[in-house]
Image (cartoon, rainbow, N blue to C red; front, top):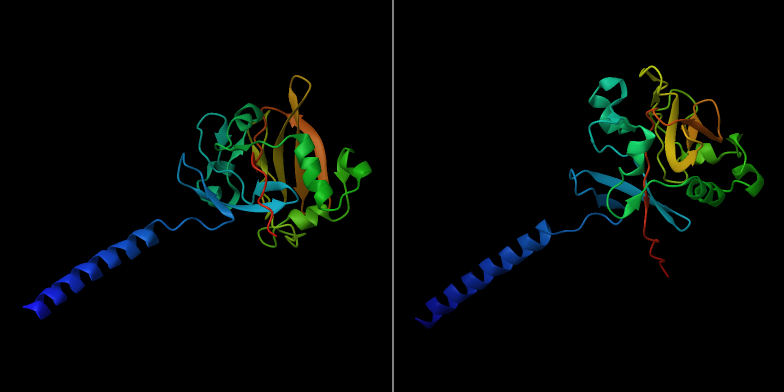
Length: 222
C-alpha cells in the first residue's frame, strides 16, 4: 500500500512539473533585440546605435487610409513594409515608439561617423554612412555592409502628385517628424548608386517608409 501511494504521489508531482515546464516555455519572452506591435502582433527586429534604439525593419502596420503597399501588392509588405503619407506617419508608430525627428536622424548619422558640417547639410552627405545602413540583400546594385545593423531595404516611394509607385530595388526614403513649411517635411534617403545619406524635404502627401525610434534609452551593459 505504501509503495502504491508513493507511486501515485510521484506521478502527480511529475505531471505538475511537466505542466510548469510547458507554461514556462509558452511564456518565453521575445529575443532581446525584438519587440511585438500589440496592434497586429507583428514582431520587429531592433538595433541599438549610440543612445538610440531603432526599428531594424520598416513599419508595416495597416492603418488603412494614408498608407499603401508598394505597387498595391501585398507580397511587398513582408519585403519592404508599407508606405505612409506624412500626417499618417506622425502618429503611426506603436506605443513607446515615435517617428524620429530630423535632429534624431542627425544623431544616428553622427554615431555612424558623419561629420558635424555634413550632418547639417542638404542633399548627399557623409562618406559611407549610407553603405553602413544598407542591407547586403535586395539592392539591385550598390549593396551595403549593414555594419550598423539598420538593415535598410530599397522600398521605393509613392508620388504625392500622381499616386504612382517608383524606385523599389533602387532607392529608399523615410519620413522624419520635422516639417518644412506648410506642405513639406524632411526625409532621409539612400540610393543604390551612392554610399552616402540624402537629406531633403518632400511634399507631405507622398508615400514614404517609416522607421520608429524608441522612447526609452537602451540598457547599458557593463
